[in-house]
Structure formats: C-alpha cells, structure tokens
Length: 377
Image (cartoon, rainbow, N blue to C red; front, side, top):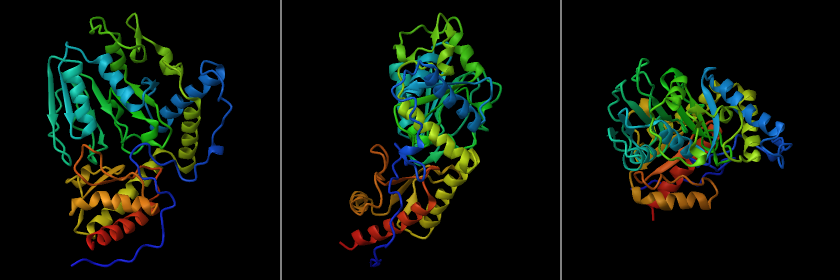
C-alpha cells in the first residue's frame, strides 16, 4: 500500500545540487567580482598580483605549511592530478593505488595502462565501501580522499606513516575546505575551484610538499616526454614561477576574480571551520531524513566514511530514479541529482559548503513526495 503525500508548497531558494560544477555561494552576484583585471594580460603586474593572491589566500584559509608550493594549473582537478602522476611516478619505486569510485578507478588505469609503471598494486573496493587501508612507506601512494561518485570518504589519514620513502598523491577535490587534511601526510594534493567552492571551471590547484619538489628535481627520474602544460621542471629544476602566479598557460581572469570573491565570502562567514560546519550540517539533514524512511539509504555503508559533500543515496525501487529526477527538474526543485553514470543507480546530492541546509531540507520533502507519487502510478 502506498502513502499519499501532498505536494510541498515551498521550493529551495537554489535548486542547484549538482556535484560539479557546484552551486555558487549564497547570494552570489556578478557585482561581487572585481573586474579590473579583465582584458588585461595575466603577465601584467595586476594579473600576477591577482593570481598570486589566489595562492596566498589558499595557503591562509587552508593553513598550508609555508614550505609547501601552491600552483594554479590548467584543466581543473583532472589536469592537476594527471600532471602529478606523469611528473613524479617512475619505475624506480613501486606504486600503490587505492580506488573505490570512478575517479580512483580512472587514476589506477592511468598508472597501469598509460604510464605503464612496472610495479603497481591496485587495491579496489566496490561502490559504497573502502578497501583495507595499509600503507607501505617504501612505495608511492595514489588515492582519492573523498569519492565523489560513491559518497565514501576517508575518516582520516592516520593510516599513512609520517616517515616514508614514497610520496602520497591525493585527489582532494571533494574534500578540500571541508575535511581536516593533515598536510604532513600529503605530498601532492590537487583540487578544482568549481567542485570545492562553486567557482568557475577549467583551473586546478596543485599543492606540493618539499619531498615532492625534491622528487621532481631528482636526477635519474624517468625523462618521459610531457606536453608543455604538464612540465613543472626545466633542466631538473622546479619552474618556480608556476607557484608564484606565473601560470603555464593563459588563465581566465574572470574565473580568478570569481574565486577571489569566494575567498572573501569564506572570510566573511568565519573561515574554513565555518565551511566544514555548513557541509556537516547538510549531511546531518540528509541523515535524519534517511533514518525516517525505509525506501532510501546511503550508498556508503559505514557512517564514519559518509561524505558530507557528495551524498550518494539508493532507492528501494531503483526504477523510480530517472522519473523522480525528471519530475523534480520539471518542478524546478532539483537539477542534476542523478548518480554518476558509472555508479549504482541512485541520486546524488551535493552538500558542499555553498549549499544551504534549508534548501536540502526542502529538497528531501520533495523527494519524499515524488517517490510516493511515482509509486502510485
């Protein structure tokens, strides 16, 4: 027997729940952007000042150690992570790749089949689970901190050893600004503006420890051919300008100004800790809703590993997923909440810090209404 539920009267103020590009911060307006740099060369003093401001504010907000390098690179998080893999991995040291969702599986494929690293160990888990986390300090380690397509995150990096020979290479694009990252455990970390903060796309950030820089500059690393946009060294020395606002290729200054507006918003609301609270509140709203209904559940089976940003859910009647998403879009209540095409059929709600918990609470009422309405057909 199905339950009849009245259509909700209230709609979310913002119906954008996509997991990338993500919602802009609340009350974002184009007038928030300083447009002085538009139409100017990114090599001008003004352009370099704006780009370097992104780097320095990133360091400040995320509390990144002073001796870590921060660079703005092309092609979003994918570009930043591929640059990392192709620049530092080599056949002198084995590589462990931990993967439990789409992007991790993709990095594993790159390491094994494209880079063709001779000694690679791929440790996989199915969607919704984590693999056993065992760190071999003598090998390089490649992993995704927060699985955007599975909703499964690391609870911490306590399993990674401080004293290690290998490098740790972390895709943190759905974790940055929300999770407590232990920089001592991370040698290369990447993320993208449009995922973490609802910034505009096409740019990535790469954060490198002194150990990673030493690997880059080390004599004897594989001298494989690299496209210009991937090259971080010249004559075995780091191209330091990349990490001072002199980008490898031409950036969009409009995107830069949009990110700087995001940073002003972050400081206004209380910094990174406020971002974490906002995202964790979003997870709390969804968890409380899921607990009340037996027809929806988290894909992540372990509560401590549930992502507060990419909240992936499965429905008891999975055949209702597509019509439910279509109905909510028709009602202008929720856009782009289908699960990733590689993941189990379900819905995915972005709960990053730019999303208001009140909007997610309203959304859950609409999902409940839509599910029961479709069951009656």
